[in-house]
Amino acid sequence: MTDNSSPSTSWPAPAKLNLFLHITGRREDGYHLLQTAFQFIDFCDELRFKVREDGVVNRVSGSVDVPPESDLVVRAARLLQEKAGVSQGVDIELNKHIPMGAGLGGGSSDAATTLVALNQLWELGWSRERLAELGLTLGADIPVFIYGQAAWAEGVGEQFEPISPPEPWYVVIIPPCHVSTPEIFNASDLTRDCPPLTIRDFLAGQGINVCESVVCKRYPQVADALEWLSQYAPARMSGTGSSVFAAFPNEEQARDIAQKVPDDWQGIVATGLNKSPLLST
Image (cartoon, rainbow, N blue to C red; front, side, top):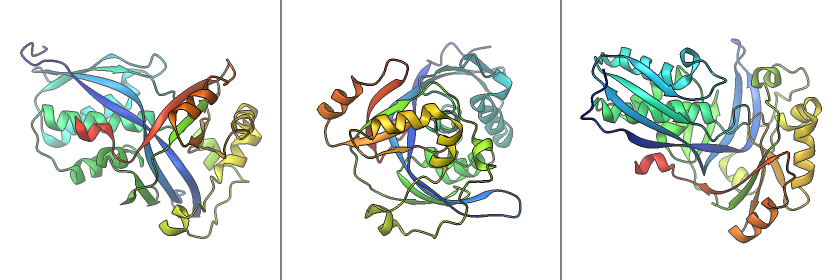
């Protein structure tokens, strides 16, 4: 049963951008060795949690395309419940704004917010490090959302170092296609031997997204969005796509460009954030 004395609380789950993405090698187990820089944007899913006393983890609302049993928020809640020996449960209301398959990390962010929120609501007192270790078992991107700092990431994406890149205004375009991450990482034409960069190299402007050319060959809509946005500023794809983005110095310019985005693409104006809004909750 739901604990009616426990009010439902709202928590943000921000999207992220990969400001660049290199692959420097591949492990024997097939996982790719990456270098990337994560930055959050103020474009968020919203989650609401209401503690239950009967131990049931229930997704009240969420993406119709993802069954509750497969949803990362449910899996994260149940994993934390199991590992912490919690007798309580929770009702989870997930209001999705971040599209799936767009390279914006929505699923990972939702799972991270779930772990951080339930750590507080269930009064567990786990450290961020411990939550991140648990989150890593569900997905390589989850720890960066738990720590909530813009980060330089290496390894399979689990080795982090905080960074403070500029926080510009972004125009993010999401064409109407869902890119399969496994398909791109398994592609024979994907570059897997990038020379390692340093953080100084990146901050000086070096780095590309090596997945970009692979995705554009297979998903023409992504190529079209990149070409269109590149008319106005240097554009790049985030993660394995499908979203593409470009930075602008102020809100006025960003909104002017966003108003010109073709109707069949989703256009978003958002600011870059080096600290996640989750840290303020």
